[in-house]
Image (cartoon, rainbow, N blue to C red; front, top):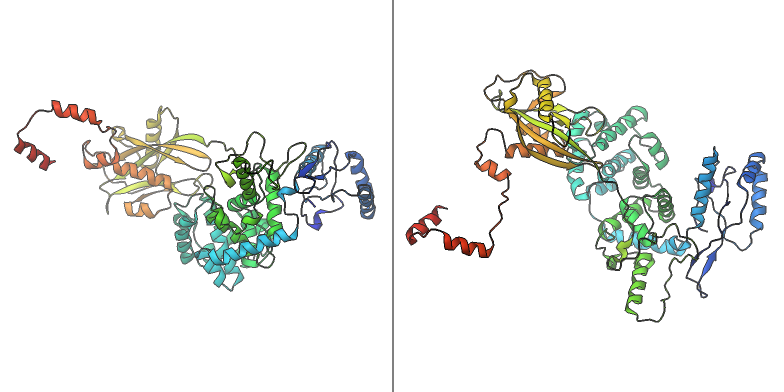
Length: 575
């Protein structure tokens, strides 16, 4: 059997169509004779099968399948995926055909073919996890919480925070979050401003907003009870995708459902030597299928956490610690490394007897493409294949720190709120305008933006201070930083909605992005009105003068005017 597919996937609407499939075979070097072949099913007419299925009742379709199966004795059992459902268009039928072809070209080498391997993987991984797992606040809270909804909430918060964020960064945010909002009800009653304020600096700010929206839905529409299954979690809660739903369901409620995150992708790709692009839809489906096959039904939450822990601490992207890996004995990547080392050393004649994927014709859909050969220096880090990413698009913005040094109660700076949707939704920032990289007319546009908030301003006081480059997930944004201090003017006491004047202390605790904190550091380093030779300017503008070479130092010493010894000593002391 090539794939482990749920029984419900084998419905009367499933279509097995192998038209246009070539006679290629996928083979493995694992039998005494050298190869075990998995022949492709015979060709058939797709439209005739489709019409027959549409006309026949369930029993007739089952009988038809039995007749087809009996005509292919000795061949591998045909297995359908859950995605093979009735296509509604000719394009849909072609897409299903392509999926069948892809699945047929997957070698069993990349799969778990017997329960013994699965058992070894589970037992070794869980034993290792029980010994080596890190002591993390969300684990302690989940393990010690008897109320299932509070336990699910604790897991939910941690999983959302950990998306695209390192554990070390999350620990402090998680601790402060749970102290402020220990229950779903507490979070549901909080304001979005409070949520953004606590989330500031963690990045991907929409996560915090959607987390609160989910809490509000649970409290207001679901009676305060978190859905118990991955399917209902993903269906009912905003911002909860397949991975987060599986993590909550398995850890908090004990549902035997697998999860796949970046760490698990790396572990599975190495354990089964999957070199194809892990970001492709087909490979992703295979990884989820493997995760579901491997998850321990007795300890699903611990198993999923163990797989992620293994990827985070042992099976790391670079310099993996294979000698400490609990599943090394079933790791195809490790076996490949050993085989390549044996071949390189030429200690054995011919090829060593190590199992590998060796299709006799065509290309296995889970192997790396021929254009990416094995790199001996990488070892197991040849897996997974690094997906090609589009570079982030580049944008430019002009922003200004507008300060009232003599405001009542101390100096204050102006912040305005971003729109409620889009990038950095609802956060506070310095007044900004979109600008062209060339900088043409950006001063005039920025000045107009400032005046729309506070009225007439002296244009001559607007000074360019430098720039800040900050990369978001998909945007590389360059901020041209300006500063303007309202010296000698009547303090502005009235501000329109969406704007506020804050002290420096209030700014550092406000819901502002990391990019705005970078902008403010530039302003603090080169505040308008400071002397060019002041200590502040020198600190913010590193010197570009290079240290003279030894030869140049000798020449400088030779041509330097001679001073008496006493004068030289005094000068040295003065410096």
